Length: 231
Length: 312
Image 1: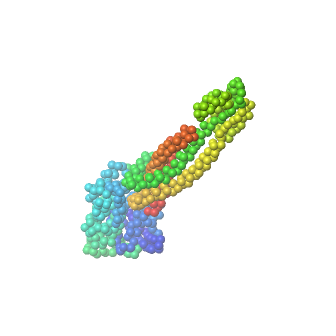
Image 2: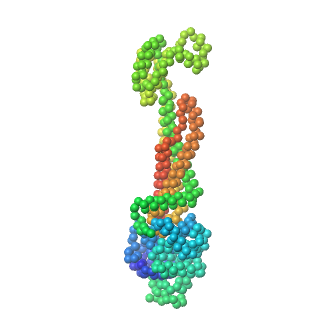
Image 3: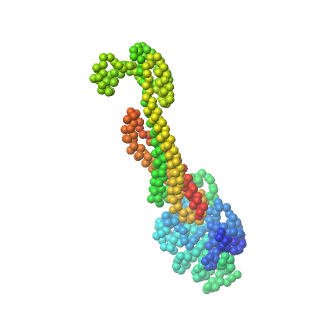
């Protein structure tokens, strides 16, 4: 599904955020991307979402190199992905329903279909009753769930999440992770950047570990307490 | 359920649907930020009102000068003792000329009685033992021959006629007025043009501030896969609406101003014995102003949004 071939990213100020990174995420796979802050997790996700472009290397999405895709085609790639940030980036002027409906409106869905899908997505994250509310009247955990609903409403093949539980307490974090697992179970590829090792090591998924811009491990996590085995 | 995979599909129904959505989104934003909408429209209205008002004034100067020349008349004083037959022949001859539209013959007796009536010198006139007034032909030039220069040529021709004693054409004040009016007209037009340029900048800037509220929205829309044109379109409509509301408001302001001014102007017109009335603008000008406002709004929005989209 996603494949990085020798990806490097150097920012304009000369900082090397990623150095010769190789990894792949299979279709329908769920994995965590971890490492200290500044290790390059966010940069890696931004490269997949085409928010940033790599300095070198290839990014294959379903076999197509998207590293040098023209700006005109970027929106088409983004519509195949659901992107979730630590800050859910909800629009305060719009209701929860409208916020979640936005990707569908952009893609040109019909009115009834939008209503059906938005309610399905909101039901999935447990916020169906709040569709007429505005984001500011929701708690932080609820806002994050709205962000997730918006990311999945389009039924994307890939979900990318950058520190989705960064602002949440452990209980809420576990709920959010459980949601991601549910999406993964229906075939969505999920890549979550998180430094919350206590949380993610409880879950049985592959850990991709970045250290100072290098991929130091693409290991498989075996569900033993807080231990990782490296391939 | 069909999903549109290509943004660049250009079937008519899809295009219409996109524009309908864009219009609704544009209007929705205006409604959501009502105070900002009102403020922006007001700024545009105030800025547009002045050049529009000046253009209306220039137009009115044109109307006014037309009315003034239409009232121009030439008085032809005939030599004393000219026979009635000669006068009839002369009138016949003159009315054949294309420069002259109407001739009114004022006999000495008629002149005397009019004079007595209008000036109140009845007692004085009764004391005279003969009528001192000559026969007069009051000539109205036709509309195509009312320019001051043309009137002077006509007056000179009339003066050549054997039966004519004197020709009076009160030209000086008309000439002077014309000169003053043409200066006023040029100055006003110049100011209107300068203000017009200023308006483009002010409208652009106002829309820029109005749209800056939406920086976050633009960012989010980009992240969830909206193309640049899709993001831009509702904002362009927002700009169009700002321009249209602003222009309508500006014309309303000008209208109120003109109506309140018209009484003063009518009094002034009375002193020139014309029944001139202030004209607002015709339907075609109304449409032209609206289109101008829309174009200004569109331009301002386009520049601002394109910059915003690039920044995200």
